[in-house]
Length: 129
Image (cartoon, rainbow, N blue to C red; front, side):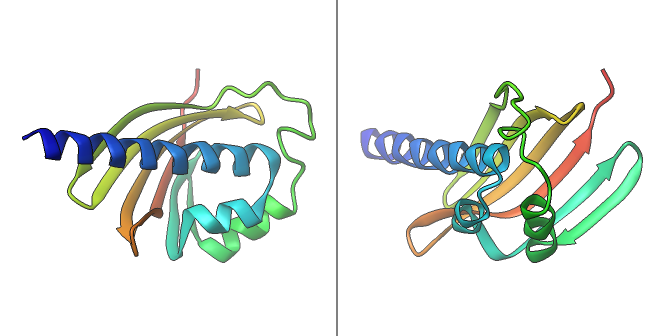
């Protein structure tokens, strides 16, 4: 029983590390860092102000690369992890990314590939305040 708890703690720390790098990449517009945290076949889907949003990772990264980052716009960093659920080698994270006058919530699916956690799916929505 102790070994599983330690493994869970290690996995939770590793997932948290990936999420912090995800936040950093989004906040600073660092697509090199974002490529490290996403699986190359990841999908990004959801809605923004009621409009459907569906992109490949390449399309999503192109958008991040060609916009001013929250950091460049001198926005306060307010991104946070709300929850993480881990079962074996899969995880779901609920995160909050308020930026650009949007109130984004993401549900991120992660899996372990080659011993490393990566984001394989990003669901996003904007919640009106």
